[in-house]
Length: 396
Image (cartoon, rainbow, N blue to C red):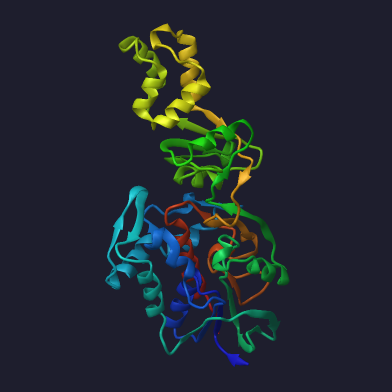
């Protein structure tokens, strides 16, 4: 049995960050990865340019059964800390909308940076390692993979969640958690397109049409709204605004779409005064893609000059455009989900070290934890922060 100080299961964003930091502390680290190369999900992220963090990253950008859990790790390793690391490796980057940072070149640069951060004499990355068993030994953890055996006093679960199974993602982290008596918050797809049925299915004919909207889902303290683009697809709704609110949407609940989110409340009344001969269809076409404008006009049932529409009816139209209800019949599932909501319960872990309270030396980081970020680099930041937090805590 090969002896190490730390065994990290998974060579994704969180696992590589954790291994690099531990190696820099002088610890001997084995990283076991079942794929043929490390960082596969990093490589496809951000259209191949890796949206590696977000300058706005803070606890409020994350969903969890315990909304306070992420505070400690995010404060101890910030977006600026990772930016400094990227800059130190000479990787150029640019900021897109809403604080999202992308490589100018390729996501390969981020993977290579993480590998370069791993000291050669301290960190061993073993790919094509199919884990067959994990067990707790006397103050050690034993891992058996592809005919080899490894042991260490510190074991890190960094195998992610089941999103994007074509990349090899599974629920293995949850199996391990249950093996060690850790509770799991039921996982579900997040940052995922929504599907439409019933009367809403008529909107599928708009496949390919996109428009800026305000999308809202949830209720009470769980309500969230995002001002970004929505995209109609042949299955339903997608685009950044929809992916964002999908994390808050629950089955059988409606989502609310505000078309023309910048419009004033009584904008149609003003238009009636200023342009009484204009039709609603014409006006909507001035602000929205033609196909969408036509579809909305048809469903609103008013196709005459504004001057011939009563104030009451115009107010009703304005209210519908500001609060259009869709009731999705589901999502496109883990196959299309960028991340997973739910996971290993934060109640089982130390928010400072990511160590399991019941199992000393067992750590959980990254997407395997019940902490899910918004779209736009937030989940990578959680990977960096949680990986860093665990690496500072290993005891030998």
